[in-house]
Image (tube, rainbow, N blue to C red; front, top):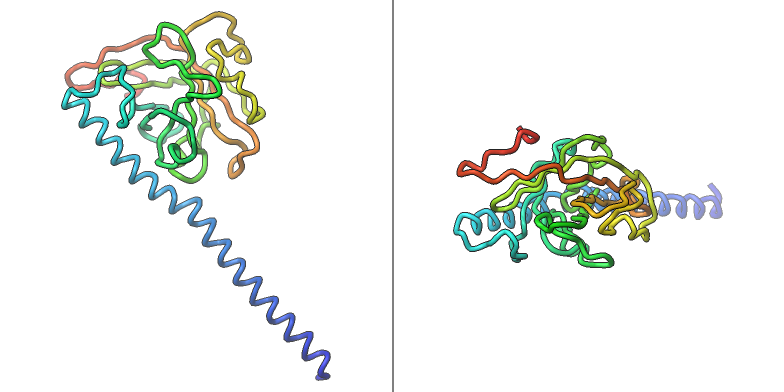
Length: 226
């Protein structure tokens, strides 16, 4: 083999090794992003959830008080993600704990016990708990239930918006007109990134409150969750 060919072969060999190394690093990064961050987030979410429920039992966390331990739990049977702790804020460092957060900006969220308004929530779709990963499985008519210390708030999904700009803040308005509503009511809005594995757009689900159920001694779940 000529010296020139030998050099070319050497370069190709080095490039091949670099590509293999890059592939391994990329694979490890993907595993970290899509698996290990879920493990960490789920552990943290479980810890914070236990603190919230312990606070309720100790009777030191009134329903309307926005404590560091969260305000309640979101239950969406269609997403098959169990209960999701809800806390204040939608910044990544907050959502990375495997929880859902309610908006404080650019449009301030109402809370379920408010007489009127839109209870607007966000959570990750991939990684960091991925609590809204299966949002696309929610159908019109499905129940969405929010649990507080003393009340179950039962919503019914009436509209979805599978893709909209991440800058579309109108979906968070007290009266979400894009959903077809024109009058004040008691609404809930779930938001997350779409398509899966990207953050280019937002996926939106809207629901409307249909009833409230007082929590009994045994914390019996409403029929929608049984």
